[in-house]
Image 1 (tube, protein in one colour):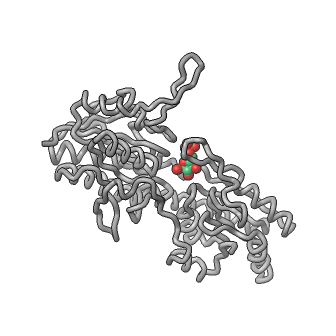
Image 2 (cartoon, rainbow, N blue to C red; image 1 turned 90 degrees about the vertical axis):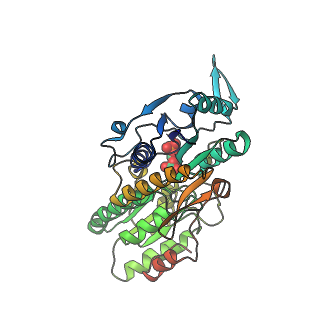
Image 3 (cartoon, protein in one colour; image 1 turned 90 degrees about the horizontal axis):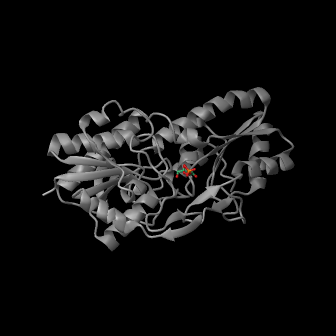
Length: 360
Ligand code: F6P
């Protein structure tokens, strides 16, 4: 008989996290009479036992607010925590602390709201420590396997699309090539969907390594057709043919950083075309700000559904979107996998129909 649940947010933040927290807390308290313990800063708060007993009033007024009232931490592996003792760094498996914390609070199920790494660690906690967990998929990348959509994604697409709209006017005034670099790590969903929505002329994504000569040709073809400017949207993980992953910088902890993706393209395009270009790296504007109504609805549906499956005793599952229906899938089927752009999928085809070049 479930009486008390835990909830935490982990990984890169995104718009909609507070919406999801609100849905979990309100559903648990109002519909099932559960107590809810919130843990701060993802897995780190579970290890350090930093928590707060959550009341409905704690989630009042946060539906439309970006960020997470619980805090989060990115690139934090509870099975390999860097501990600094008097300047000497050691790496320790601190996962047993999580077991102790949940036992101390007498928590019947932990709700983790996170992306691929959070879900991968949750699966390890389930398989190696036998913890009962339910996951809610969140990320701006939309790269979580097993769900058609994660909340945070559409708000990031809105932000990137607005940026493309603004770049159009200055590109046209100065007859320039405008390069917009967006986030996405190893998946190109943000670039692809914002590029379609914003009418980009070139979309460069990790799934389709580009030929710089073909990008240059697309720009010249536009100029020959009388268009003196071009808009290029590129994922931070996009790469030229033959340089697989050159700009992917390993952080040494299963995560990657991406440096200079657009700077490399800009230099090469200047060399090949002698045309002026300018770069805009959208960066953390895609991670911040208030969630769009779409993401508020999705985060509310997923948060409430997570509590519903707990009430049915269906632990160790991730709630997901399956053809607009909210369902759930075993976490072990999700862990370690990614959802990348199908290079022959409908979205890529639509872009090509609109005359978009993918540099291939
Ligand atoms: O995973 C989301 C993301 O924003 C990536 O797109 C980006 O590369 C990374 O997180 C940045 O991580 P951090 O917030 O740790 O700088």
